[in-house]
Image (cartoon, rainbow, N blue to C red; front, side, top):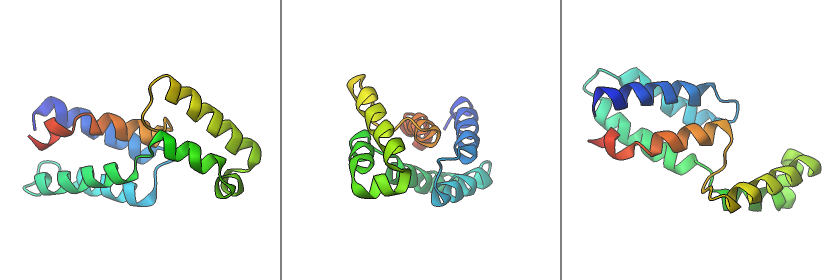
Length: 119
């Protein structure tokens, strides 16, 4: 991976860790990745990090379905869930593939650099 990509992903990873919507396991994977920058373990940890991001990023259709479900309404509250579902439909119409919360937005940017990360 080139230095420009590394600098960008380090910045995005710090953004991801700071996102209130980031899951605990994603924060742990992100921190493990940061801890291996400039070490021989970076390539192996990069593969694990990417796998975690791909597993945890929320596809927009899943977000909408969850927000419209009874579980989603119980989790968010009915008014908030309705707002999330409506927002999800709006951004899906505009072409979004994933949730646009701060954690998913950072993860999507990192995953867009996947090929450069693995090079």
